[in-house]
Length: 444
Image (cartoon, rainbow, N blue to C red; front, side):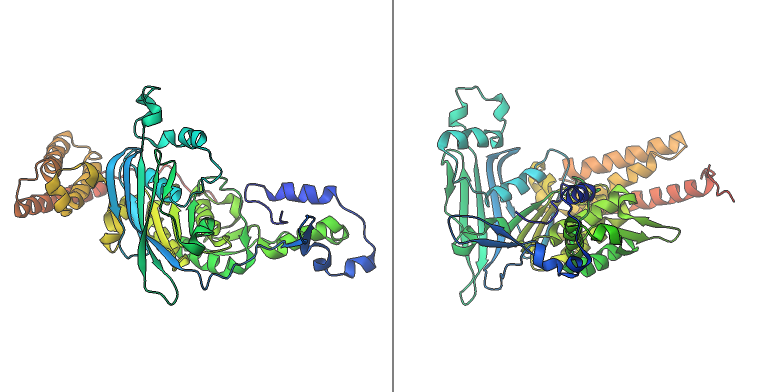
């Protein structure tokens, strides 16, 4: 057990618990060090007593090998028939594509390769993993025992004083577990090597280890442009005379439990922030609180709730935050999909279901995305005739780019460029001529 507040508990509940067990102390007793009463917790056991610090301990990982995912193959797994994803040498990759194409499933596959099924018997393992089998809901009950899937991961490992090498781990349902295993220290510390971050839960709760606070401030300001300061919640002298409140003071000394955001026209607390701003704070603090910086960080829906203009800064901040980790994230972000620097970091799962020539010529999907964006502008134009003609051109281009790859590159580039220029001119003119008057005003 630890005196640290779990992430799924509010600060108020911790204060109530502290006050419930309060004891009145004399002034002399108040002078004693807080550490004497709550720095450690003694756990009785048949073995020698274990001392657990109230501050999350830091593990020395300087001699641990570095592990990276090189390739991931999924067979009959979720929506995937037989798919292989190759990850490059970049520290961050983004998986993009429409809903249901298998982005989150791919992260789950990687996480499962760092799972532990040692306590499962064969019947329980088969029942738990049935949901991973492709189209398992349509299987006849008699066919379910024979249903199978396979996840194969090729990992690179860089050990100290040893030549970097690769190894393979495979998880299959019919094999009832793993074929091959992670080596040595990796196998015994799987929970520290791969971390699946879920940032969409309990955005109103904030807790950050104090030594990570300066880095959090830098990253939050880099993403939002707003400076932050700690929102300290002090206890008065009467409350400090209670032993349990001294414990609360210790927790507050070790963690930042709230912050203020200085905006141009106001200063607000963390709980007053928008969902997008709280998502940014949660994204950074969740991983910063880890005892060990994971070798592999998996982040699902990394830009959800975040304003479009901040999508790329969020990606850049997370990459700076964890420079020694391999980060694999998913998102539905148009800015990330269209403008992520170093395009090799983008893994577009739309290529799973496209003609082979399109897969060999990825520029087609990039032009396709630009034409798709032009459609949003076209459909906002008030003049029906102009709107209809421009929309017809856009739909024809989309079809030629992806569904009819026989058309030559030079013609497609010429037609697309002309179309985008025409739409930009029409849209700019419409913005000037048909902008509505704002229906809001500042009252003195």
